[in-house]
Image (cartoon, rainbow, N blue to C red; front, side, top):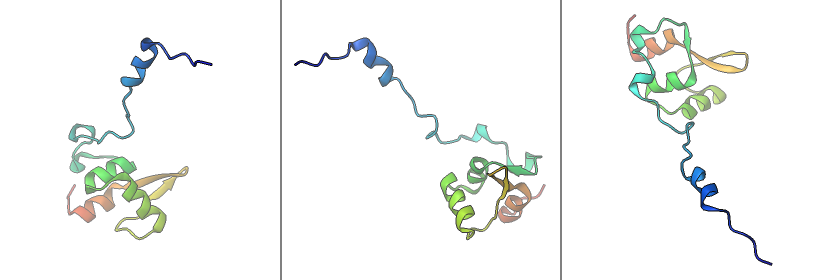
Length: 92
């Protein structure tokens, strides 16, 4: 029994897929830390400001052994901007 091969038109969309979750944030994605007015930022933003990967931030939160402790809002991690500024020595 022969298995039919997919037509080339079906294979083309698979070649054009992009992985948006693995993209590295750029400088334009986050404002300078001095300009942030919110009390807390996301894990991605905190990782950007500290030059770490988001997974490192999550490990710090899970193990409670990093230089910062996040707060949890409805089960999500939020990193206090005041703590980030203090750690980096950035004034408001």
